[in-house]
Image (cartoon, rainbow, N blue to C red; front, top):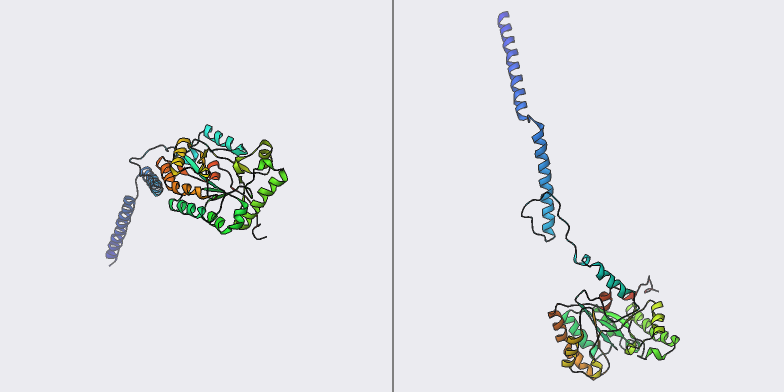
Length: 310
């Protein structure tokens, strides 16, 4: 019995040793012999994941996926608004520094339609309808006594997204008035506009374009921008639609400000008749229609804080 126990003990010990060695060998075989390739594989996996994430983000932005991987970062693509050259920026700055402006910068194919003397209930609604159908923004230089008569039309102009400027109270020639009277003409109109749409214009167009150095300096000190025009359609003089179109084609160019009217007499039916074709013509030439404030990159209205509720 004793001999049997010893043999059994030895056999059990040897069996335990064999099992231990076998387990160690199996465990060792499951581990990498060299940690270098494992680290490289993990790093490559991380890089692949990062590149895949970048590719997904680019595709989400509308960029096509890369045809092949590159080792160096590619330069960022400049946004269109960042593409202005120093000369173009200087041109825009020179225009913005002026109190009186006749046209905008020429380096963009933009043009501004402007309408004076309204609002009324005859021509203003027809013009607004066309502008809405064509999705064209415009600038309306309104007269105070017309705002007083037709405040609902002013609200419609504003509601449609157009810019509103000041064209005096009753359309006098400002150069024939003393400064206190010119201030009343402009101040009263701005007050009526503010009471109607809660906006106080900074864009001013003097009736007939009549201005002098003293008035220019006077209004400039009050932060007004005097907006003249580069193209006079002479719709007020009764030009036919064909004549208006010929004038515009001949005189308009990038940065142009076109003078038209939305009130003032039966002759303005030509303005209404020519407007759709005029818009189509400029769009066919690659122009963008903008309001005057956007054309010049300036504010259209004075900023107020909590004044509406006062």
